[in-house]
Structures are given as structure tokens and as C-alpha cells.
Amino acid sequence: MKIPDHGRFAYSPIGERRTYDWPGGARLAVYIANNVERFAFAKGIGHLISVENQPPDQRGHAWRDYGNRVGIWRMLDMLDELDLPACHLINSSIFEYAPSIPKAIMARGDEFVGHGRTNAERQGQMWEDDERRLIEEARDIIAHETGRSPRGWMGPWISESFVTPDLLQEAGYTFIMDWPCDDQPFWMATRNGRIMSVPYSIDLNDATQQIHHHHTPQAYGDMLIDRFDEMKRQSRKQPLVCPIPLHPMLTGQPQRILHLRRALKHMRDNSDGVWFTRPGEIYDHCAALAEGIVP
Image (cartoon, rainbow, N blue to C red; front, side, top):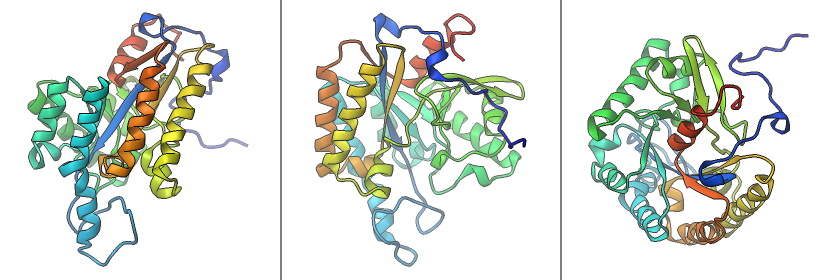
């Protein structure tokens, strides 16, 4: 029986791959991914912290906007306090709506990753020409506002159509974060070349754990520490990537950022053999390795 497959990459068991080090001989790469998102009022889709009200549901919209008005600023202060880099998966409409946010991100020297126009929509439902316009528009706005085109992409809601990797590669993106199936980067085929998959975690996503699985902020902080400690142990055998996916509307809340700070401080205080980095730097390192090392 032939089961339908995506055809983007072949199966590759992690224990059979060639090994390498991260810069400085590190074995575990850790990066923080802030999802900086804007939502339409009373239209489209959005995260829910409670039951949905009838439209316009100003309560749900206001909770989501807390991330841009308060949460992101608490998180940037915390990252400065701990002297940690980050990447920011940014809706391009943020540049018009809240320009002080990208300015603060640029001042830190952090990386922008394309994240569509708004998280009120899913690109996987679009026709190919519309999706191409979405991808190119996000690229062009980030390039115009920051002076540099984004190299990485994560779709709103991690949504893809059958041609998303093809469109991204054709638009000049070099890596994608939509395929959470590995702890190492790997190459994906597209119709005009290849694009790298950089690991991203659904399992460790703050929204997954605290909204959908109803774990407490303390439990989430413990999960971050446990994953870091175990991956650091596993990385003695091979290089690994530990992403930390966050949403300012959620983890930027005081009762949650307390435990995020606790977890990140634990990582920083146990950083021997650890590379705190950004996904673009992971791509650069892996793309420079000899052909065949990255599967």
C-alpha cells in the first residue's frame, strides 16, 4: 500500500546522522522565539484565553492586544536583564500598528522572522497567487522598515498550503520553521531548489501548554528547565536545537513571566556547552557545513 507523502524530505533517524559542533564547541543551541502578533477586531480568528463571547468580543481582542501594549515590553526587559538574544516572529502589520515594538527589537540587534500579515488569517486556505502576495508583502515590509529582508518564515498558526515551501524559496527565504518534526536542522526540497527546516517546538509552545493543556505557569517553567536539562544531556552525542516559543499576550503576564525568568536564569547559569543564538545563525552555521552533514 502506498501512503501519500509530502515528498519534501526522506526519513532520517537522528542516531544515524553525521555529527558536528555548534560555534565554540557547543552542543546545544537554544533560541527564544517571541510571536509578535496583531489580530483584527471582530474579524478572523484569534487565540482565546476563555470562552468566546458573541462578536465583537472586545474581551478576547483586548487580551490579545495586552501582548503588544504590555507583555512584549516586560519580555524585552527580561531578555536585557539576562543578556539573552531572541528572534521575533512578527506579523508585518505590527510595523504600522505598533512601530515602537520593531524599533526596540532592532535596538537589541535581534532577528525578525516573517510571520504573515496578521494572525487573524491562515495562509493554508489561500489560493497560490494570494499566498504568494502574502509572503512577498511580509518580506517587503520587513525589508523596507528594517533595511534587511527576513530569511526565515513561520506561517500564521503554522499554517501551510501544498506549495508554501516552494513559494518561500522563490521569494528568497532560506529557512522555514513550520515543520516541528526534528531536533536538528534538515534540508527540504522545493520545486526550484531547497530550503532548510530549523527546529521549532509545538510541544514546548507556551500557548500549547498553558491554554490547550491547561498547565500552570509554574509547571510550564518546570517543563522548560526539564527540556533544557535533558537535551543538554542528549547533546553529548550529537548537536541539538532547543527552541523556546513564546507569546507576549500569554507569558508576558506577570504570573507567567516570573516562571519564564526562573527557567531562563537556570539555563544561563548552566550554559557550559550551550549556544544561545537565533535561528538565522543556526541556518548560517549549518549551511556552511560540508555537503551531506545536514540531512
